[in-house]
Length: 79
Image (cartoon, rainbow, N blue to C red; front, side, top):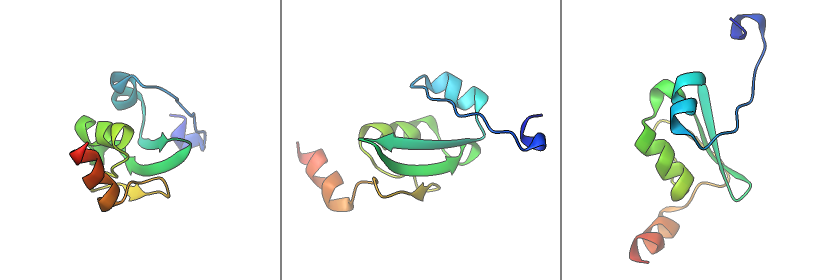
């Protein structure tokens, strides 16, 4: 309803149930930087968690400046 009226609501939550039940798009920030943005129907909960925990942009998300590089992800896997 609100979308049709041009109204947006910003929800800040770590509760994945809230995120997947209430939003149309998700944007993940890590350390104050955008990791990625995606339509909620285009990502899985596991992909969103990967963005949150690893900073790894989901395949169907638009990467932001905070997305981890392949080298950073490789170092994280070795740790």
